[in-house]
Every structure is written in C-alpha cells, then in structure tokens.
Image (tube, rainbow, N blue to C red):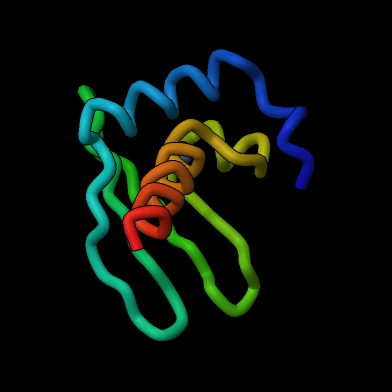
Length: 86
Ligand SMILES: [Zn+2]
C-alpha cells in the first residue's frame, strides 16, 4: 500500500493521537496485536495481523476507503517507537 496516497490531514491527526498518548496497546498474541485509540466521541479498535502483515480498524473511514486511517497510522507510529526503544 502506497503511503503517499494518505492525505496530510490523516497523517497530522495520526501524529497528534500518537503524541498525546491516545494509542493503547491492548493484547498481543503470536498472530495479532490489538490497539485501542482513545477518541473524543468513540474509541476505535485497530488490529494488526502479523501473518498477513495487514492492518484494519473499525472506524467509518477505514470501512469506506479500505486504506490506512489516522488510527492505523497512529498505531504504526506507536510500534515504531516501541521497536526503536528496543
Ligand atoms: Zn480508523
């Protein structure tokens, strides 16, 4: 999936969510990682499938566009930081 198809607004929101501690890693199994994104109106559930190397989210944006939403991008930022922290 090409990153440059994602709008700057989506990226900006993802960065904000990440920087403000809105990403919570919930459960990690051998196959999946589940995240909750704390949101003003309704929390969002993000899931990473390790085997398929694919992401999904229960928000409306993802359901309609099937591309990375701000919640998925924020979860990716969270994982990158976790990996960098070693
Ligand atoms: Zn989403």
